[in-house]
Every structure is written in C-alpha cells, then in structure tokens.
Length: 152
Image: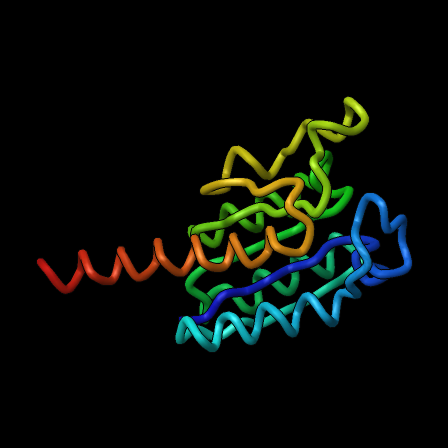
C-alpha cells in the first residue's frame, strides 16, 4: 500500500515559521515520523513538497497511478488552488486534507477550502500529529476496502 503525502507552499520552512501557529518540527522531521509510522502499518509513504501549484499537479498526475491514497496539506492553495483540487479529484483516490493549525480559528478567509469537498475528511489544528492521524485513518479505510474485496 502506497500513500502520497503532499506538502504545499511554505511548508518547506516549517520549524522556522511562526512556531506558535505551525509548531517547531521541520518538514523533514514530520516526513520521517510519517515514514516510520507507515512502516509499522505495513505501508509505504512517498513525500513531496513544492511551492508551485503546477509542480504539485504534475507530481499528482505522475504518481497517482501507483498510489492507493493521498494526504495533502495544500497550504495557502487550500483556498484557491482549483487546478490542484481538480488533479486530486481526477485521481479518484481517497484524499485526506491536513492543516497544522486550526484554519477555522484563524482569519475568516482561511476557513474556506476548495479541497474539502473532494476529500474523505479534513484534520485541522492537531499540529504534526494531524499527519499521523490522517495516515492511520486512511490506511485503516484502505485495509477495510481490501477486506471487503476478500469477503466477496
């Protein structure tokens, strides 16, 4: 089982950004924790970060055929990244949207997500642990789908 974990704009500077909002873990640390947890769940995680929407779309289009699900923190593209949204929807894969901060407790404009309507769910405000929760939930869902296929 392979899960794509996609990080959008400005997430490459985690650990340096406003730590009160985004925490003190660098992106490499979060990716490492995800890969370790995936290994214990008998899954593979492929991580990717870009500050460019087009590069994120290219990655999704190139990698989705070999993936079983997607976890994405779209960063600011959450609110206006329609080509990103369309690329995610086109994969027909289960998507979980993650945000380090609680986007509903911040500026009003942050509460609108163009990704949420095509996502299985959204985890917001749990810091880096939200990624782990998304991974565990997505893998459980995918394993459940596999179990249903076996029972038929």
